[in-house]
Image 1: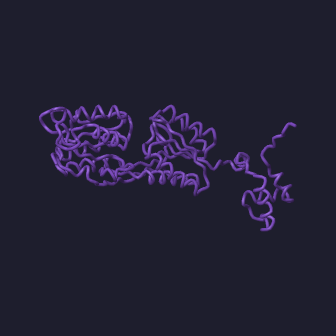
Image 2: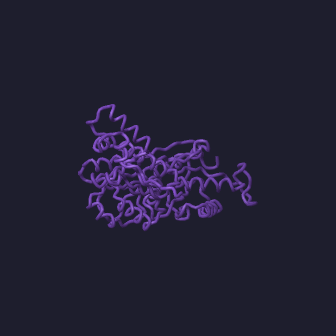
Image 3: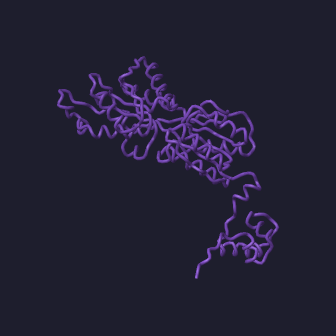
Length: 353
C-alpha cells in the first residue's frame, strides 16, 4: 500500500476539528477579541492536536510587514559581535520580531549581497556593520521604506541613516595615556587593517596621546594589518628584538591582544623574567600591555583593557531601528557610546619593573 503524505494542516482543518467557523479560528490564531473562553480553548486544543502553524507568508501579504529585520556583522564567531547580536535579538524579541543574521567577513561584496538578500525577503529593517565605503546600493531600499541603522562604523556614500558608534579615539587615547602615566615612553601600537574605520580611529587616539605628552610618533613602533597570529607574531618579535624595543604595547582589538599574549607565551625570555633573550647579553623584560576590547578570561589573565559595550551598541542600534519602524521620521542621529579603562595589572607596570 502506498502511504499518502498529508500537507500541513490549515485553518479549515482546525475549524472542522473544533466544530467552529473559519473566522473563529482566525480570531484565535491572531489573538483577536470576540471569542468566548470555552470556544477559544476548544480551538486551541484542535490547533495543538493537529500541529497547526500560522502562515506568516500570507499574513505578510495582508499586513505589508514581515515582522523581521536583517543584521549584517563582520563575524558571528567574534565575541564582540556575538554580544552585539544577542542584544539586537533581545530588543527584537520584545517587539515580536525575528532577526536574520549574516557575516560579511570584511567583504564589501558579501555585505551588499547579504543586505540585498534580506531586502528581497522583505525584512522591515536593517542593522549593518559596514564592510565597504559605498552604500548607494541601499538608497532604493531606503526610498522604498526599509529602515536602516549602521552600527560600530559609519557608512560610506549612500542614504542618510542613524549611526551608533563607540568612542574609539578617546578610548585609545585613554589607554595610551595610562601607559604614559606609568612611565612608558616607547609604546608600540598593533592595529587592525588601516582601511577599517575603528582601526583608523584607535590609531588617531594613540597619536593624540603621544602628541599631548610630547612624545614622537615612530612608524617602526606601529604595525597595522589583519589580526592573524602569524602577522602579529612577526610584528611583535620584530619590535621586541630591535635595538630600542618598546617597553609597552597597545593592541587595537581583542584578537590582537590574544595573539600578542600567545607571542609572549612563546618567547622563553618572558618565563621567568630575567632569562636572556636569544643568548644575548641583556635580559628581556615582558612589555606592559593594554588592549582595546575586553575579552573572555582577560580578568583571570590580569589584562588591562579599554572596554567597549557591544551589548549597549546592539541595544541602542535596535532601539533606534524600532523607533523608525514605529513612525519616527526625525533627522538622522549619530550616537557615540563611551568606553572605560579597566586596570587589572598588565598596564600598570613601569619600564624595567
